[in-house]
Length: 321
Ligand code: SF4
Image (cartoon, rainbow, N blue to C red):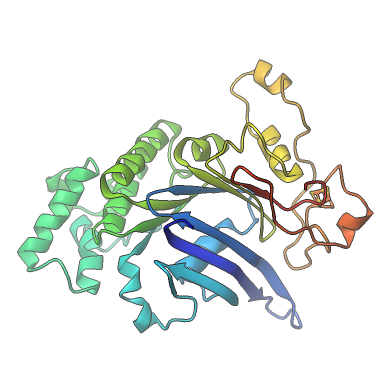
């Protein structure tokens, strides 16, 4: 049994459709996984598969419809906002859009110090300022930046400000929701390498959500693949990219941009075709059956369950045993 900082058990999040006569968006439908202390779980899947909803539900921006969210063994799924306050010191989030996630009316110092103020920690005002200056230096910014406003900075610098804010309470796990996708390619590696360095220094755990498979491969110890509100494959420690088992994962990898034309020609299976179905009416049986070239009769009626396939590898597909 691992030392899990985060465990998610059968997490469900449905959103009612406005004027939809009781219809719901099935954003998450029974997602389960765990993240061990000091490790990174990378989560991949197409847009609309539920990755960002999962991030926001874990951090309780959204209330879950059902299921458990265990932080350090304590289920926070049903806690009130007041009860959640001490837990929020342990779990922080880095958002996708560094332009939208920082308050334009606050100085950089106020933004980074806000968690200290909310949690009434960090000592006197002067001591809090010192913590902010220290954090600015750690993320590669300068003390002189503290009194400026977020709009005065580049996208990469704003994401560094967001990272400084997420770290100031010394959390144990950070939910990174596409933290680099709004940044220039030249900046992405700098931000990711900084996150890795902080992980090693502070024994942090990450849930790292991204659609860039190569970046997820670079940062992650474990990788999960989501499709239409469900986890369809999970690989702990192994290399999912060398040995993808679920047809969706295989298609996802084949659809990713190749480094060169020869590598693209060497690919063995077909890229993904068609669009992800509506989460309001997910297909019965295996949700991937409308796009799967291996789909048989049972795939349209029987839902495959996650199976342990050995060597830290799980997948949900009727073809696998
Ligand atoms: Fe394809 Fe059937 Fe496997 Fe689903 S269960 S991935 S439809 S073969």
